[in-house]
Image (cartoon, rainbow, N blue to C red; front, side, top):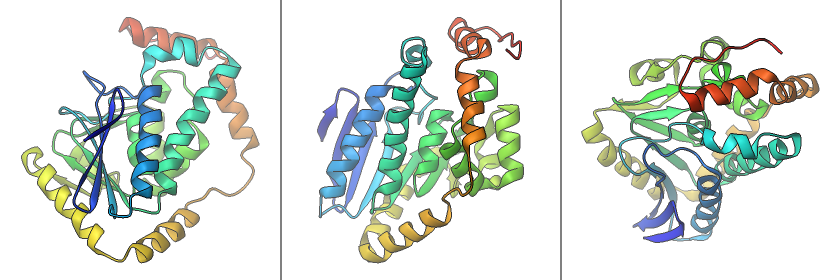
Length: 260
């Protein structure tokens, strides 16, 4: 196993590259984790012996959301927000643009930025412990157009509206029913099952998979003018509610939003 950075490891099991994210205790999605993921995907993409990529997280949780403790510094000004969003987009695009299939193996929490990252993967398999949510509405956060588009493309408009408007948490069976994940298995069986899926994909024709992935990605691209949507997202970034949302999260109390 090779350490890409302090919280990201890359190894290969036969024809499958395995990227392990390890940011205890809950694998909060930090900037270092996103940077490590991009670097690991670059190395795995250039490894001709690796035909598929498996994304896992150490411990019994996938990713319990973005590292909110970084928001005060990294998302406190317009320039900082743009830099942060650029890093977020780079990590998502690194997964989406990989010509090799990327599989997410999900135990426990898959929340916010964790679910956004999982949605960028081609396939998602969860254990019965899986918990899924996008709590943007509880943080005063304007969720990005790209991530929202992938959510809508995956679960449809009705389910996406419920996920985004309520910010509620869904169990693994509910996630399966709405199409957030491909399959749910007992946690004890998940790793072996997903490992077999990864090797099965690796045995198939790489050019065929790459072509199918490109076609499917093309079909999910958003169309139209999103200028107004981007303005509303930026408004959230500059709002008092956004400051209150992240402070309430850090102080472990209910937020008091004022719509300003």
